[in-house]
Length: 263
Ligand code: 9J3
Ligand code: ZN
Image (cartoon, rainbow, N blue to C red; front, side, top):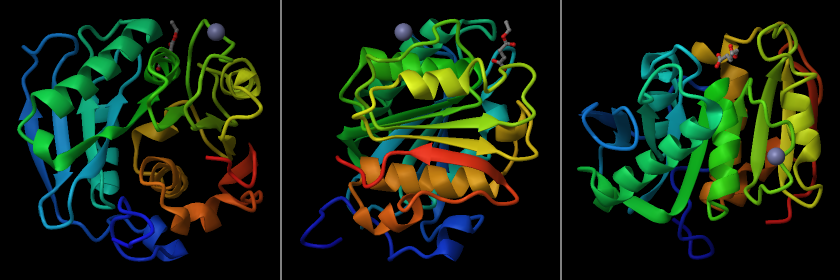
């Protein structure tokens, strides 16, 4: 890590390093029992080596009727870039977004205070991600805990359409073909109602559905890695992938955001 930024981890990034199926850190994993309180257990993916210092950590929630397995691809993909990733199950698969938000925060507390990897984590650098109702839960968690450093809702669903309370840098993914949480009534108003002064971005996936975030996806991965590196690690080496704003492509129908970033 550099003298300028004690939180940067791993080598200088390139477009191919953020598109790769794995980063440079070997990853181990450990299971958390469903008998814990506050959430439904899960799997922690973490860099195996302890020689690079502590890491930022992110809890990841699934959508309605779904399990941690639906988000499992993000575990090794993100942890191998230098994060501790906790994919969780919810108490019940029908829990609503506000409950999923509380469960994401309970999972982060478990991770930093009780888990077997707690000494590997920097408890001041935490984030949340989630799919669909778990994406709504991601916004709910950020609203409830403004100290979070990054939030990434993936094709989010919530009955609350307005998020002016959020203070956490937030990257929202929508999908052009989403008929369950249509971007025009979920992801887009969620983005539009975040404070305009906030570091925020909206990426509308092209040729995608509500369930695109449930399988390995390079566009989701590369911009999630960049967002987490930029705002959890304060790693400005990744600013090049976020600013100037990405242009439309085969996989990006639209990208909106503020640029340059303020935090
Ligand atoms: O995948 C999701 O969490 C979908 C949200 C949904 O189906 O809401 C309808 C009740
Ligand atoms: Zn609201």
